[in-house]
Length: 336
Image (cartoon, rainbow, N blue to C red; front, side):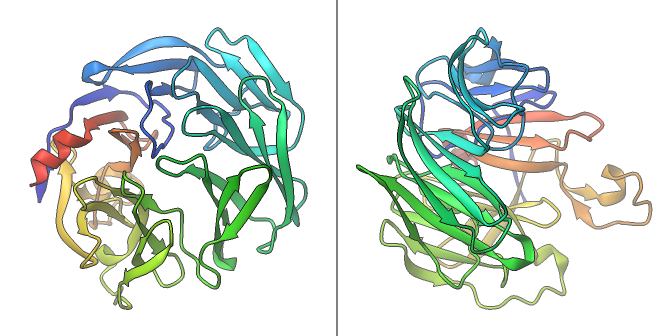
């Protein structure tokens, strides 16, 4: 096992925005609508507040990469942009379920759920809220759960439609004078990928077969895919967190939240990694209702890229919840 010394451990749960593009600022927020900036040394500094009408869910809050502005989906499902004094700059009514700023903060991509059968994808001018284009599509999975993620060095986005046992669809959305969608992997259920920071490769998980795959980009050509796995050993069952490091290795997760250094070319684990003080322990030490469960689990349940900083968290139900930060270069120096 490789033990990692984090840059900073902060007590409490601070919600972060997963981001593949590097930004001038990294902002987080908490359940009390307070906004924090991540300062040098990964110190958190109070930076302002969100509107108390904001939905505090995944993909409903995003921050401008170089300005103190937040785009949020409100309780009435409208879209709004606020400054950090919680003063509204512009607002659009609608049925919005997810949204995200683009690489430089010039645009905001959104998805509205019009019904169980139809979605509307739109792109707005982030400065004044003018609608640049929209596209209605049929939800072929029916009543799916949409998610948006950014692509390195691009204003395009990945749209994931997830419908549990009914499958997952991935699209690349691009905008020139109109919105165009390309379905990336028809007839497969690959999840939102982890990107090599230069944008030339991705690693992803085929959710039905539960195997990892490696693709070149922007062609999305398959470079390799794991053979079918024998999952009698539940430690081999994959989880959903993935980080593609700039040194060409990756970090993947298993179903018990344990994390592993992974070779995307050989498609094999190299070694288990854990933060010092947060090594895997028997499940009954974490989940008090599982008195007879001794399977090793990690207290760290989330581990994601937030620009050049990697951010990890325990569950908010943990006895002592924490948010952990580590600079990517520092992590790489500790694993090589």
